[in-house]
Image (cartoon, rainbow, N blue to C red):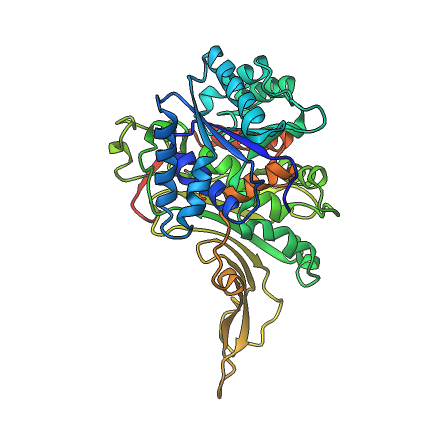
Length: 464
Ligand code: BG6
């Protein structure tokens, strides 16, 4: 579905990693799929002194890195829709220049008042400055009355603790309406993660079993093989819990734990996710096994990392969703960098049957496991037990599996950032987090941080 009014994408921090690796490629792909209005424009905003030609060359190089996925003609058209505005995020005059650039594009190229989407791909320290300057310069007021909209897309981390998140929210809600604010958690836009709700609420097979009566534990992993990869300055002092725990891991948990929202509606879905997160607490009693943190060997030698850094690059948390549906079920949340493999997965372990038709003397360890494979090898699988073929009564595990790559055939899975940008244009906030979700997620994370501050920081190398 294409929206009628063209959109101008303003990217703050356009020369940074996020924009280079994900945003510009995502816009290019949306353009190639015909999902952007032909008059769409991209206006990059950054400190670097680029001329228009230099900026277009920069965009062209990003497009070239995609190989031969797009024709030269298409890339040229895309590059021709990009513009640059130079300025510091805290410089008031720069926003006047930006406003002039946008007005002149509307008048001369787009020939109508376009929607304005402001993407903050900048370190969180600049958020307040940008919000204030956007609002004070009038840039957030739509130019065409009912015609166009203005929206702001904010990357995580949203605050660095509960207090700073609440401060940011206070400021944001003064300057913008909630419908204008899109808080990104790109994990919500990953295909398998989006599929959790469809799977749970559109199949009678599992939903009746979805509670503490039949489920023993749920494990959620987000493992990455690589380390901080040049992001030491951002990561050090933030750590795994804030970087991926407060957001990606907890959002996956919320989707598995939440009640039926009854409708595919952003208000209802976000409300249910927030309720599930609000019921989250540490599993008691907390022990050295149930709450662990680690740091990969060599982390302290990374660029821009303090030589005596105490920042965790791994966490293991055993939690409980304290409500009628889930009380007693263990939720094991684990994430880390420099792990043996890159893998994000949600595994739901069902309780064992009371009896087992197993050969005499064999221990009954037969459990069904439902796995959402978020990445790589995206899909959903169910492990069940079957009799081994032949003259035996022994059981063996078998797997029923759905793999995205089979149903996509030769198509490529859309990147989560394409979905994020696309949904923002459509004004659909289902895949974005609400104020309430951010707040309750921080509340839980603050409890964890308090409880583990005395826990030893274990060094690991691949496994822990
Ligand atoms: C980001 C974190 O939000 O998510 C990174 O800041 C992490 O540290 C990344 O590597 C993981 O996302 P993905 O999509 O690569 O799994």
